[in-house]
Image (cartoon, rainbow, N blue to C red; front, top):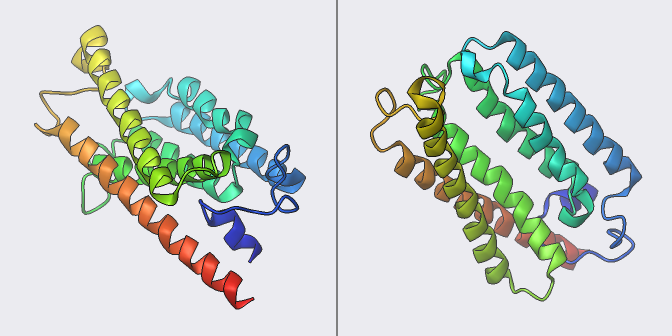
Length: 217
Protein backbone atom coordinates (compact mmCIF):
# COMPACT_ATOMS: atom_id res chain seq x y z
CA UNK A 1 0.00 0.00 0.00
CA UNK A 2 2.90 2.40 0.69
CA UNK A 3 4.02 2.26 -2.94
CA UNK A 4 0.49 2.83 -4.14
CA UNK A 5 0.20 5.97 -2.05
CA UNK A 6 3.26 7.37 -3.83
CA UNK A 7 1.86 6.60 -7.30
CA UNK A 8 -1.82 7.56 -7.06
CA UNK A 9 -1.96 11.14 -8.37
CA UNK A 10 -5.30 12.14 -6.88
CA UNK A 11 -6.34 11.24 -3.39
CA UNK A 12 -6.88 12.81 -0.03
CA UNK A 13 -4.24 11.48 2.34
CA UNK A 14 -4.47 11.80 6.12
CA UNK A 15 -2.17 14.30 7.79
CA UNK A 16 -0.13 11.47 9.30
CA UNK A 17 0.83 10.34 5.79
CA UNK A 18 1.28 13.65 3.99
CA UNK A 19 1.61 16.65 6.26
CA UNK A 20 1.07 20.10 4.71
CA UNK A 21 4.56 21.34 5.60
CA UNK A 22 6.42 18.10 4.83
CA UNK A 23 4.44 16.23 2.19
CA UNK A 24 7.07 13.71 1.24
CA UNK A 25 9.19 13.04 4.33
CA UNK A 26 12.93 13.00 4.92
CA UNK A 27 13.57 9.67 3.15
CA UNK A 28 11.69 10.69 0.02
CA UNK A 29 13.45 14.06 0.10
CA UNK A 30 16.80 12.28 -0.05
CA UNK A 31 15.54 10.13 -2.90
CA UNK A 32 14.55 13.23 -4.84
CA UNK A 33 18.02 14.73 -4.43
CA UNK A 34 19.62 11.50 -5.63
CA UNK A 35 17.34 11.40 -8.68
CA UNK A 36 18.13 15.03 -9.58
CA UNK A 37 21.87 14.52 -9.06
CA UNK A 38 22.05 11.35 -11.17
CA UNK A 39 20.00 12.97 -13.93
CA UNK A 40 22.22 16.07 -13.89
CA UNK A 41 25.34 13.91 -14.26
CA UNK A 42 23.76 12.11 -17.20
CA UNK A 43 22.92 15.42 -18.88
CA UNK A 44 26.55 16.54 -18.52
CA UNK A 45 27.79 13.22 -19.91
CA UNK A 46 25.43 13.41 -22.89
CA UNK A 47 26.47 17.00 -23.62
CA UNK A 48 30.14 15.98 -23.53
CA UNK A 49 29.61 13.05 -25.91
CA UNK A 50 26.90 14.53 -28.15
CA UNK A 51 27.14 13.75 -31.85
CA UNK A 52 24.73 16.56 -32.75
CA UNK A 53 26.50 19.91 -32.14
CA UNK A 54 23.39 21.78 -30.98
CA UNK A 55 23.14 19.45 -27.95
CA UNK A 56 26.58 20.22 -26.52
CA UNK A 57 25.27 22.98 -24.28
CA UNK A 58 21.98 21.31 -23.40
CA UNK A 59 23.05 20.55 -19.84
CA UNK A 60 23.12 24.28 -19.05
CA UNK A 61 19.37 24.39 -19.68
CA UNK A 62 18.28 20.91 -18.64
CA UNK A 63 19.92 20.86 -15.20
CA UNK A 64 17.97 23.93 -13.95
CA UNK A 65 14.81 22.40 -15.48
CA UNK A 66 15.51 19.15 -13.62
CA UNK A 67 16.01 20.85 -10.25
CA UNK A 68 12.99 23.17 -10.50
CA UNK A 69 10.44 20.53 -9.40
CA UNK A 70 12.75 19.62 -6.52
CA UNK A 71 12.80 23.22 -5.30
CA UNK A 72 9.00 23.23 -5.54
CA UNK A 73 8.66 19.68 -4.15
CA UNK A 74 6.44 20.59 -1.22
CA UNK A 75 4.10 22.67 -3.35
CA UNK A 76 3.98 19.89 -5.94
CA UNK A 77 3.67 17.11 -3.33
CA UNK A 78 6.40 15.50 -5.38
CA UNK A 79 7.11 11.78 -4.98
CA UNK A 80 10.15 9.82 -6.21
CA UNK A 81 7.95 7.95 -8.70
CA UNK A 82 6.72 11.14 -10.35
CA UNK A 83 10.20 12.67 -10.28
CA UNK A 84 11.78 9.64 -11.96
CA UNK A 85 9.14 9.80 -14.69
CA UNK A 86 9.93 13.49 -15.17
CA UNK A 87 13.68 12.84 -15.26
CA UNK A 88 13.21 10.13 -17.88
CA UNK A 89 11.11 12.52 -19.97
CA UNK A 90 13.97 15.02 -20.09
CA UNK A 91 16.51 12.26 -20.63
CA UNK A 92 14.76 10.73 -23.66
CA UNK A 93 14.69 14.18 -25.25
CA UNK A 94 18.37 14.70 -24.50
CA UNK A 95 19.23 11.37 -26.15
CA UNK A 96 18.52 13.22 -29.39
CA UNK A 97 22.16 14.27 -28.98
CA UNK A 98 23.04 10.93 -30.59
CA UNK A 99 20.94 11.55 -33.67
CA UNK A 100 17.82 9.71 -32.54
CA UNK A 101 15.57 12.43 -33.92
CA UNK A 102 17.12 11.86 -37.35
CA UNK A 103 17.38 8.05 -37.08
CA UNK A 104 15.05 6.67 -34.47
CA UNK A 105 15.98 3.35 -32.79
CA UNK A 106 12.23 2.75 -32.38
CA UNK A 107 9.71 1.59 -35.01
CA UNK A 108 8.21 5.09 -34.76
CA UNK A 109 9.66 8.59 -34.94
CA UNK A 110 11.70 9.51 -31.83
CA UNK A 111 9.87 12.86 -31.86
CA UNK A 112 6.51 11.08 -31.50
CA UNK A 113 7.76 9.06 -28.54
CA UNK A 114 9.31 12.07 -26.77
CA UNK A 115 6.22 14.28 -27.03
CA UNK A 116 3.89 11.47 -26.00
CA UNK A 117 5.93 10.32 -23.02
CA UNK A 118 6.76 13.84 -21.84
CA UNK A 119 3.03 14.61 -21.68
CA UNK A 120 2.40 11.44 -19.67
CA UNK A 121 5.05 12.29 -17.08
CA UNK A 122 4.17 15.97 -16.71
CA UNK A 123 0.40 15.39 -16.60
CA UNK A 124 0.74 12.81 -13.83
CA UNK A 125 2.84 15.23 -11.79
CA UNK A 126 0.43 18.12 -12.46
CA UNK A 127 -2.59 15.97 -11.63
CA UNK A 128 -1.24 15.08 -8.21
CA UNK A 129 -0.17 18.67 -7.46
CA UNK A 130 -3.58 20.07 -8.38
CA UNK A 131 -5.49 17.41 -6.45
CA UNK A 132 -3.43 17.87 -3.30
CA UNK A 133 -3.30 21.68 -3.38
CA UNK A 134 -6.94 22.20 -4.33
CA UNK A 135 -9.02 19.48 -2.64
CA UNK A 136 -12.14 21.55 -3.33
CA UNK A 137 -11.87 20.64 -7.02
CA UNK A 138 -13.90 17.73 -8.30
CA UNK A 139 -12.01 14.92 -10.13
CA UNK A 140 -13.23 16.09 -13.56
CA UNK A 141 -12.04 19.62 -12.77
CA UNK A 142 -8.59 18.34 -11.79
CA UNK A 143 -8.48 16.30 -15.00
CA UNK A 144 -9.51 19.23 -17.20
CA UNK A 145 -7.05 21.63 -15.54
CA UNK A 146 -4.14 19.18 -15.83
CA UNK A 147 -4.99 18.54 -19.49
CA UNK A 148 -5.25 22.21 -20.41
CA UNK A 149 -2.10 23.11 -18.48
CA UNK A 150 -0.14 20.37 -20.25
CA UNK A 151 -1.40 21.48 -23.64
CA UNK A 152 -0.38 25.05 -22.77
CA UNK A 153 3.14 23.85 -21.94
CA UNK A 154 3.23 21.97 -25.24
CA UNK A 155 2.10 25.05 -27.18
CA UNK A 156 4.75 27.21 -25.50
CA UNK A 157 7.40 24.68 -26.45
CA UNK A 158 6.33 24.80 -30.11
CA UNK A 159 6.47 28.61 -30.03
CA UNK A 160 9.95 28.42 -28.52
CA UNK A 161 11.03 26.10 -31.35
CA UNK A 162 9.75 28.57 -33.92
CA UNK A 163 11.40 31.55 -32.21
CA UNK A 164 14.75 29.71 -32.10
CA UNK A 165 14.42 29.17 -35.86
CA UNK A 166 13.73 32.87 -36.45
CA UNK A 167 16.61 34.02 -34.24
CA UNK A 168 19.25 31.38 -34.96
CA UNK A 169 18.30 29.99 -38.33
CA UNK A 170 17.66 26.41 -39.36
CA UNK A 171 21.16 25.11 -38.65
CA UNK A 172 21.29 26.16 -34.98
CA UNK A 173 17.59 26.55 -34.23
CA UNK A 174 15.27 23.84 -32.89
CA UNK A 175 12.93 23.88 -35.90
CA UNK A 176 14.16 22.31 -39.15
CA UNK A 177 11.46 23.12 -41.74
CA UNK A 178 13.44 21.81 -44.71
CA UNK A 179 14.30 18.43 -43.21
CA UNK A 180 11.60 17.71 -40.62
CA UNK A 181 8.07 16.37 -41.07
CA UNK A 182 5.81 18.88 -42.82
CA UNK A 183 3.19 18.88 -40.06
CA UNK A 184 5.68 18.58 -37.20
CA UNK A 185 4.01 21.14 -34.91
CA UNK A 186 0.54 19.64 -35.33
CA UNK A 187 1.90 16.14 -34.77
CA UNK A 188 3.79 17.23 -31.64
CA UNK A 189 0.68 18.79 -30.10
CA UNK A 190 -1.41 15.76 -31.03
CA UNK A 191 1.04 13.48 -29.25
CA UNK A 192 1.02 15.83 -26.25
CA UNK A 193 -2.76 15.44 -26.18
CA UNK A 194 -2.62 11.65 -26.47
CA UNK A 195 0.02 11.46 -23.76
CA UNK A 196 -1.97 13.68 -21.40
CA UNK A 197 -5.13 11.62 -21.95
CA UNK A 198 -3.17 8.42 -21.30
CA UNK A 199 -1.87 9.88 -18.04
CA UNK A 200 -5.38 10.81 -16.94
CA UNK A 201 -6.56 7.28 -17.74
CA UNK A 202 -3.72 5.85 -15.65
CA UNK A 203 -4.62 8.23 -12.80
CA UNK A 204 -8.25 7.11 -12.99
CA UNK A 205 -7.33 3.41 -12.90
CA UNK A 206 -4.92 3.86 -9.98
CA UNK A 207 -7.55 5.85 -8.12
CA UNK A 208 -10.05 3.02 -8.55
CA UNK A 209 -7.49 0.45 -7.37
CA UNK A 210 -6.67 2.58 -4.32
CA UNK A 211 -10.35 3.09 -3.44
CA UNK A 212 -11.06 -0.61 -3.90
CA UNK A 213 -8.16 -1.70 -1.69
CA UNK A 214 -9.09 0.86 0.96
CA UNK A 215 -12.68 -0.40 1.11
CA UNK A 216 -11.42 -4.00 1.29
CA UNK A 217 -9.20 -3.11 4.28
